[in-house]
Image 1: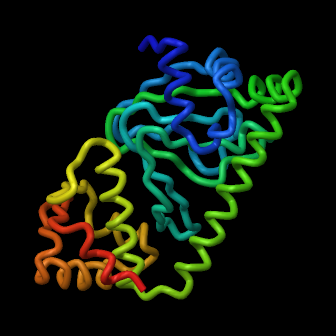
Image 2 (image 1 turned 135 degrees about the vertical axis):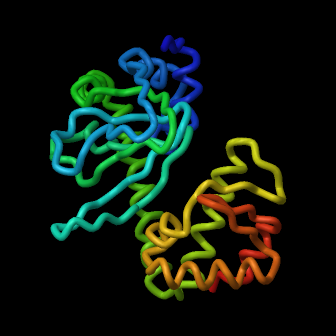
Length: 231
């Protein structure tokens, strides 16, 4: 899988972590990026593995999983094209805090943490800009967590469906009748609720004509109507 420097720069420019970098700085990062390809259902890395590489998705989707001692798993997030994961490897070699599993065929670029740390030593401006970008992401994550702690299950599920719709639209879906590939269990895990609670609320949305459920997918007829359920 060949990837030109220009394509890699364009991909990196879409990533919030690198949004503060200029064209020349992005080119330096692109020069150390290596293309990677993974089949569906492949584990890219597991929770507890050594952390030495970060990844940016070019095509396909992955999910982030945490495992409990009793064998249960929880899905923390789904990532698609333009998303980055494992980015803390740019700063330290700590153990992975979660497992990353591909949901379909994935193309990505991989950046070794040692290469990024060398770039940051040689070009301190890159380090400063990356820290600023990561600080913004941390602040946004804290605000999202604080908001969710006061939300009902229905509100959290509606938020998850809205996010899945946005991701589909970013990849070319229209304004209405947006097809989302996710099971009730997937949505429940992302919303931090039980499957039964998520299923009941999805049934409410279906009766209201907002969505139509299928096997492992749902069609959101009126995405804007979801906002009525977020409070």
